[in-house]
Length: 397
Image 1 (cartoon, helix red, strand yellow):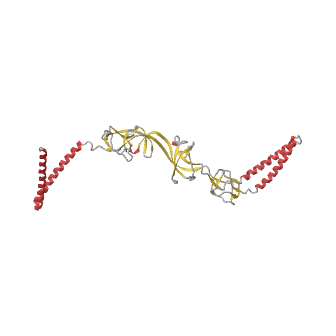
Image 2: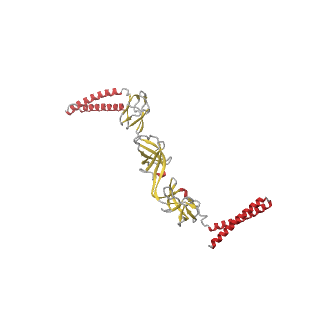
């Protein structure tokens, strides 16, 4: 009780002194005496310098005693083993083996065109007819001669079977008939070349030569037929991936112009390395039910050339390299309840990269705490403070 009373009295005295000093300062200033005002200012400046010097001494002592002042702040994450899929990114063009420009096998006037642009046709359907230049009439004449040769041969054969006539007469009749049959078949083949037939089922994409035009065998383009059912993408893959990019490998296909993505597989991987650019061809079959994927369309490909089901992945940005060319990261050891721990340098070897992450092959196992932000500003053995926070999903960053 006495202590409380004493403190109260002391407080009143200090307050009274301050009030008195304030009154004294006001009195000096009201006196308008320049000499007194200057003397008072010198007194106040001296006290200010004394207080500033004492503050410096206190700060120096605090800096010595406060061990947490120079502890760097870092964020960390826990390494987990997860599935790592590496993708080889390439560009390719859409193709189809059923994309063909038809040429005539016979020269003459394009007499009839039986189809229109955009028309669906079946395999073997007649698309156009070239004037045969009188071959049909020649066929009729040959057919008559062939019929006569057959009648002669049949009669001679009956006589020969009855042992009537000579063998030479029989053989001559047979030979004459066979010659006429071959002549008829050859002429039919020639006339058959005047018909343009669909080599496969598809759509007439373009009529190049109009009806009535003169066409030349193997030179004049008649029309284009396309089938969009069996579409595929062809691309060139560097030879170093010859063991990784094989048949049935998964591929992510993107068509930027269509804004479309599909999943596909490698249908065929070439066995020939092009000596000019050291690449091999790869074909990826693609479905085309809605028929909006066209030949020569550009596609972006991501081919899964490597998969590790238990990979250790870390950001590439936290990896440093020492003077010996070794890569390292910092892990947290001896962490206490105040989230203070020791940064330890850990040598690692790395593998493939994908985006912003890299695969660690050796040096790290699962459930190790690694420094993320601040990794490049700490030293081996330095005490650090971990300031991880939780996001909206309550996941530790």
